Each structure stands twice: as C-alpha cells, then as structure tokens.
Length: 333
Ligand SMILES: Nc1nc2c(ncn2[C@@H]2O[C@H](COP(=O)(O)OP(=O)(O)OP(=O)(O)O)[C@@H](O)[C@H]2O)c(=O)[nH]1
Ligand SMILES: [Mg+2]
Image 1 (cartoon, rainbow, N blue to C red):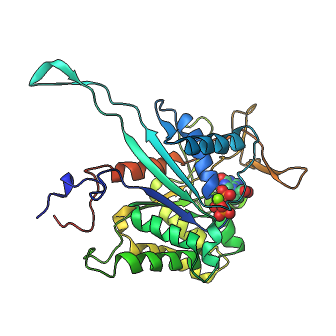
Image 2: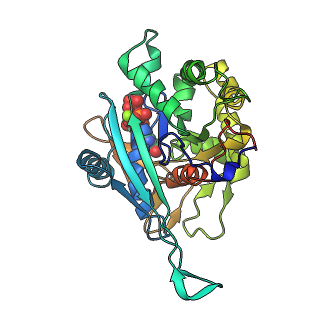
C-alpha cells in the first residue's frame, strides 16, 4: 500500500502539475485568462498575485489585462497557439510557534501554483483531420492534472457544438491514457473545473433568475444574483437542455463517465461581470447588460470589470493539485 498523502502532485517532474484549458471556439477562454489577474487584484483578500514566469508571459499578461481595463473590450480571437507560464502566489499564513520550540516562529509557506496554460483556437475539433495544434492540445491535456473546461451557454444556444468537441477531445485523451494498465479504475486522473462562461449575458442571467437558480448573498452590497455552489450542477444541466444540439444533454454524462465525480466542480463565471450602476450602487435586474455594441461593430464593456468566479476555479485546482493533496488514480491506498 502506498501512502497517497506523501505522493507529490507530479512525481515524474517533481513539480506542481500543469493546468490545461479547453473549450469550443469563442467560448471565452482568452477572456477568462485576461480576467484572472483583474480577479486576483479585486479578490478582497489582498496578497494574491499573478506573475509571468518569463518575459513573454509577462508581456502577454499585461496586454490581456490592458485590453479589458484600458481598451474596455475583449481580446481578439486566438489564431496562433500561445503558451503562458504564470505563477499564482497567495498570502503567507501568519507565523506560528511550535509548542516544542516556543522561542522561534515558523513562517508558513505562501501558497504557490504554476499555471502552464496553452491557449489555442477553439475550432480545432471542427477539423476532422489531425493537425499540429490539435496534437499540442491533446499533449497538454494528457500532461496536465488540472483542467479548466470552458462551456459557453450562449454558443450552445446558437451553434451547439460543445458535445462534439468534448467527445472528440476526451476520446483522444482516453486513447492515450486509459488503454494501458496505469489507471486501473478506468477514469482519467484529472481534477476538472467546469466553467460556465458569460453569466453576465442577459439570456444566461435570465435562465438563472427565472429558473430559480439564484440567491442573494446577504453580505454582498452589490446584490448580484449568485448561483449557490450546490445548484451549479443543476444549472449546468439546464443550460445543456436549452442548447441547440440535443446531444448537449449528454455532456454531463460524458464528463462523469470520464472523470471521478468527486474531482469535478462546476463554476458560474463571467470575465467582465454584470453591469452595476455606480450611482445606484447595486445590481439592477432591469439594467444588467455590461457588454454593448460599439460604433465600429465591435464590443465595449460598459461599466466596471468585475470578474465573477474567475480566480475560484484556478485556486480550487491549485489546492487540489498541490504536492501531497493529489490522489492519483495510479495509487490505491
Ligand atoms: N458577455 C460576455 N461575453 C464574453 C465574455 N467572455 C467572452 N465573451 C465574448 O466571447 C467572445 C470570445 O471570447 P474569447 O475569450 O476570445 O473566446 P476564446 O474561447 O478564446 O475563442 P477562440 O480563441 O477563438 O477559440 C468575446 O469576444 C466576447 O464577445 C463574458 O464574460 N461576458
Ligand atoms: Mg482565444
């Protein structure tokens, strides 16, 4: 029997495992990354930072953030495969004294997660033949142990191709990981954060509010309607039912067939957040739209950028994957 608690996150490389991201074309992957540093700054719990590990990643991070905050619009569709190496640093816990060594204080290590993201165009799986970028996506899904799966309810209602993409990508990953004997339980070893994007979109908000999925957080002065944690899975199922493609109803089953149920967590996210009228000082259900058309046929972010649930999935994955916390399917204690 192997003591799983002593197994580091990624034994082969002796470092924290990577987090990979995927989702259909235009589902909001790059906007999510752009919102991440804004979200960490706004988190209300000071001390969280997102840092580029190399010059390219630092420049890209600044560019993404400026697009949202200065240009007040969204990043352009991803054309070339971009590799980001970022580190999230959290605040160190207060120093502690040990009872057997009371005259010295032990400084707790600050939480630190590596984010090795590959940002790809999401239409890869629209092409049936193999290509280099698709290969890179599958490699990154296989190598990672944390996944951010981006699900765009707006696209599902209009185009409805998430099932096709997910099914194809999962079968490619399973073909590489599950055919051998390594994962005896027949499931992929990843933790997966299923992120429903564009919650601020009026249609998505309406389904949440009229479907009775939302609640008000009594501590939130802005009175933004939230989907409580224990309702998000049901909300996801509902959005899949509203999709254009009837196969979308199978997305949840597909996820639960490939991943351990206790390693899947659902999040309702928005890169820009809902509109808050600063004079009113709170959310107005009759005036929620935060993304409007501009004169040049593009989009403008109308009010403040207040990302919703963007850092939460990343920090959840970081916590699940930190050395010692992960239970790989390869070991059975
Ligand atoms: N309302 C709203 N729209 C969003 C949000 N995030 C993204 N969008 C819209 O979705 C579009 C696509 O977002 P991207 O982040 O570029 O999507 P992507 O998944 O990176 O797309 P590809 O790189 O083309 O695969 C944006 O241009 C916005 O119009 C959001 O939080 N709210
Ligand atoms: Mg993109």
